[in-house]
Image 1 (cartoon, chains in turn cyan, blue):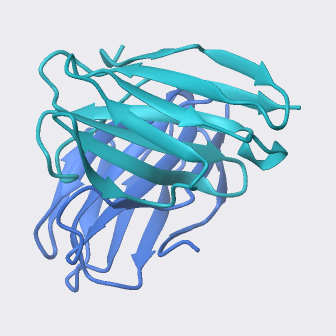
Image 2: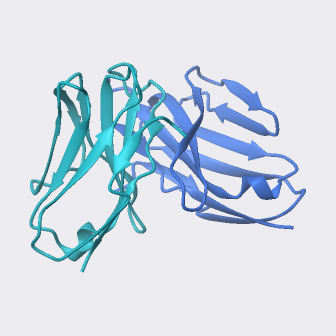
Length: 114
Length: 113
């Protein structure tokens, strides 16, 4: 158990819909990272938040957005969902702002878009 | 596309054998991390290498960072069934000081008893 929690564990929805994935970092960690893992793309970095502010952006689509709240939990919003958005979405947390810090991954949310 | 390449993509190993997985980057890395993901699980941090030519060992696992800091390897000796999973390397480019860890596609390891 990494100490990072993610909800829900599974999500099944239809194309065109919008979903919200939630992540609570380890106690004391200020950074939250979001990753997408699909079979053909591996682990893709989406975005990082540090202490409420966006710090780095990866291959995140415009249909996706994220935020980190004052209590440090984070939400990833996916809208206008397409079949290709089906994937495992992981969040990870770390104590500091640098990606060189050890990242602790949550159990993931498996999103299925039908 | 992938800027950190891992080979092989799949590794089928007989229990007790050794194997090596390789990670190559097109650009110089400030550090490299290795993660292991068990089937159905999430990536778990194994180790981080920072210095050119650095070698670190964790029991039967030996990690190496190349002299040019563009490649890395993970060598596992006397493979056990508990070594099953996908091993990812993740590199931080020297030009990305913040959060852009570039993950390789992983080496999926299957161990036959």
